[in-house]
Amino acid sequence: MKHAFATRRFFACFFAALGVFALNGQLSRQSDTVAVLTEALRGELHAHQAYLAYSKKAVEEKYVRIGELFTALAVSEAIHARNFSASLAKLGAPSSVDVPEITVSDTRTNLKNATENELQEIDVKYPAFIKRVTAEGQDAAAKGITYAWQAEKQHRDLVTRLQMGASSMFGLVVKSVEGTKVTYYVCKVCGSTLIELPKFSCPNCGNPVSNYTLVEGAGP
Image 1: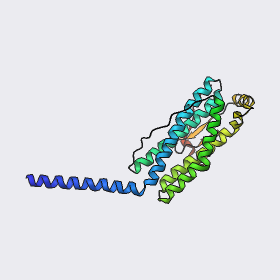
Image 2: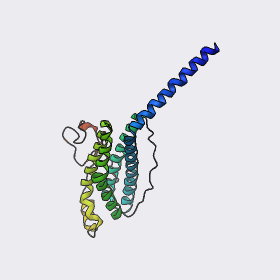
Image 3: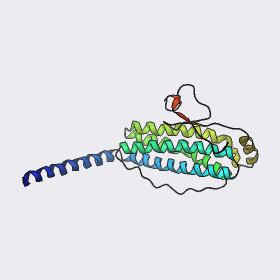
Image 4: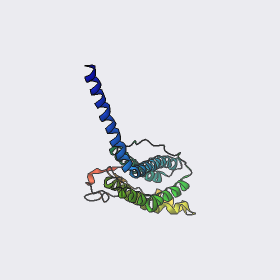
């Protein structure tokens, strides 16, 4: 009886070890993809928190419309972070990351930093990410990163009209922006961020327009 119990225990441990070995082997074959997704997750979580902080600061400085823009961007970044976390989970990798400290300045500086960060992601970071995961044959991860990349381009377009606000014409630009109410919609699937709903489907991920949600602004 003891012998049978010992045999069952041996095989249980053996197969458990095989499972761990297989998982470690899978992760080793996808090590760069895991590294990319982890870095992307960290960046999106940081952006989400930064944009929320920027929104709060903008409202404090009476720039309610700019606060609404930052709120919409924060919602989009949170969706990207959720998608990257899910991709890591599918690969059996942990999705807990340390998020860098958020630095909040005046709204003029925050706009400038937001523009620079978006351009860095669009021109450098995300194209490199896609290349790295594609090299490991991770098409699903590449698709998720592409969704985020396309949304970041939309973010760039939204902040471009305020980029001049980081210069000496800040007052004039802000006066124009604050006088115009803008509505923001974010796709819950990919984070696409628009000021007008598309007719049928999301231009980024192709899912039905019903997946867009209206972002509640920071002000009336």
